[in-house]
Length: 365
Image (cartoon, rainbow, N blue to C red; front, side):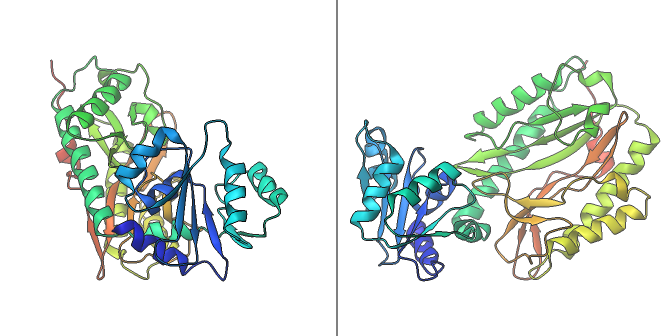
């Protein structure tokens, strides 16, 4: 069972502590398979099954289905989660506890200190480091999320009308992904017509597809909790020369980045390749965000790729590669794919064409 293996790997990272308290919901899911909320997990330094999931009666049957064999502590409806956890830690005689500093509030940390059951050790994103390298089951789910996102996009291209708004496109895209088997969107889709494409995180509005000659679409699907993240730009009529040149520059830069991706290459080295390529077009200053990020149970997770990320990538990581060029008031171009780092290089999981001519779209009359 994948979750047992993951907990076994986590125990090796406890640095002499008696246990680690998992409070991040995505991390709880990764280590147990439990998809509910309002739950903590204690993983001790003991044997393979030395873990306890703390939840409430609403999820008792669900936990039995999703986490067979996992020890549980079901609190009463009148009991609060953290105080119950503190009592349980005392009963387990935990004297050194690792806590998830990245997801724990100051109030939670104070309550744990006030319980005085032992020493608190601030965690170093132990679970997130494990999650960065996907196992075979996770890669399979991400592939499915990519496939559904692509099929939905192809379906939506065939339905584009001049009077369709950004919001209508986004809503129909989500509906289509759900019909194809997705849990839902990986994040709120970005659909940005013309000048609004200069906003990397533009929110869909009432602009119609026919109002400008191009539209940027950034979207993804979620399948059993795992996500995809893609971006394409469709042109619906003749576009400004500067945007056409930006398209060429971004595509060239993205292909160059993917070409150098392999185990041992750092995020900042890949980012430098992109910026050097864009500099050849005089557009390096128009790229104003990170190059990419890991995807999995969260849409943004380790590793990161950008100027300030010197950590090497490793085989099994799945990252986005998404350079962009933006001109305020005119528009922007971003091209994004999901890439699996392999033992010898990289595999692009997405297959939608990226060439300019392949993304010319005629609007339905």
